[in-house]
Picture 1 (tube, rainbow, N blue to C red):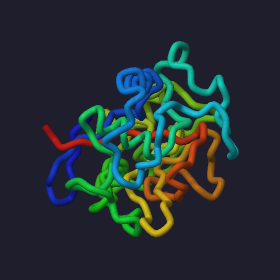
Picture 2: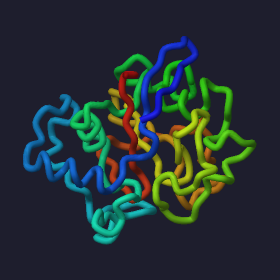
Picture 3: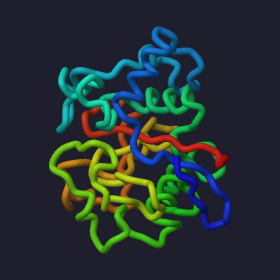
Length: 222
């Protein structure tokens, strides 16, 4: 994890990369079949296994997730509740509001509120996740090994792939409809209406599963 600083000088930690397939597989092996301890909104989540089919532009197939051959690729094909459970198991939290808890759904563009956005933009100082004038260094036609695009490093040294690998779930949900924010932008995406900007944050159902959506975790500073 990397320690980052917020505008109010408080500090927290964020994963250097998205959670990998190998890391997530370790979690599943350790807890299955136990799915207890989830928050109320995830009470119906009966399995942490990844999907092998599903709708969407990037459906999950049997080959999408294979920790034995793709250990260092980003984990995807899991939903918001799975991501939150992993972070809790790992002693962390799904990135949300600076100081802890969920980031208010309407604060998606407020860098002084969102842990994820603050880390990507250095409190709003940068527009793109590579610190440049575009996100060219982060663009990729396919998923890639985490941190393999060395120039796609965020506003804080050591934080990679905050754009152009997979979208990342954020702990920022609308309690009226269950929609949760996504961050970062995924592979195969170049100015298609969701450019690879730090402040872009579309939303999906909490149970949304797709091959281009993953996550990373945050935690209190040590």
